[in-house]
Image (cartoon, rainbow, N blue to C red):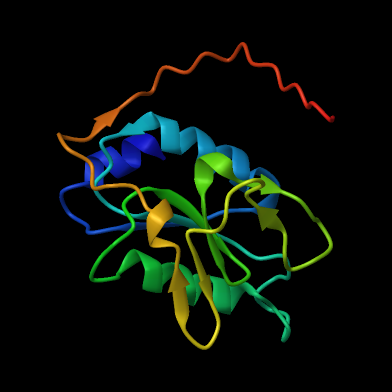
Length: 150
């Protein structure tokens, strides 16, 4: 994904990535660290209910991801749009496998929420990047997750 974005960076104003939900938070978070000086939106989305189902959340999630990607004043970072919330990818985690509210960013508010209007938390939006896009493709796979509970 990082190399695809790099190869097409000058041809497009934004990128929308459709992803399965089981790995979305991991993929989006990793990509957020791989794309240094990102000056364009990269919005991940998907659905809990398959698009062929009448009650699917896929259409709404995709439409809103496209809206956030195409905004006049873009949020230039890797994000996840899911169930009326735009969250920072590097702070995202999947919290529910059986509910439409599948992703959250604990300890930080969403970048934006949608309803009748779009409400942005402007104080959380990063400043525009300075410099050219640099893609880091070498990843250290020696990782360990430690969950601390007080």
